[in-house]
Image (cartoon, rainbow, N blue to C red; front, side, top):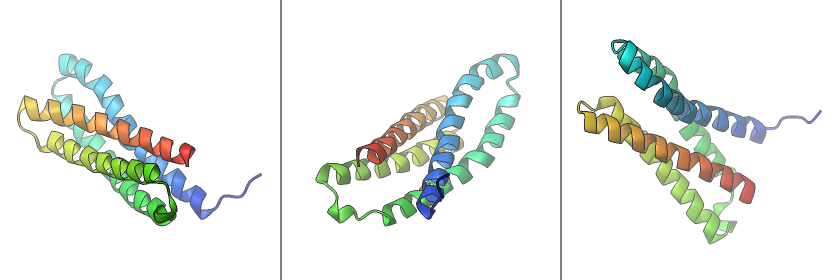
Length: 136
């Protein structure tokens, strides 16, 4: 059996936290419409429960992302790799910003735009993470 290393732990924690963040958004996207129809009062409870798990996962994703950056000599990487890293960081930040807009939004537009753009930027950041790992 292979032995785990600090890099193994770092990447595992990053992928796990990102999976909770992105996967939870996808799960809620599927749960909200039927909940809205059958139990509209449950939406707030579900959203608050998700937030208690999702925001710590987002924080872990950010922290392990910084740890990942410290483990790579980005100055030695190609300009394409560097651009991809910068785009991934921007999308990850936007993901949190849009999720915050969705969380504090009071209008249907804020909720819809924050939720939709939060999910899209999260998915794009996750895709770029896979691209960076497999293309490096």
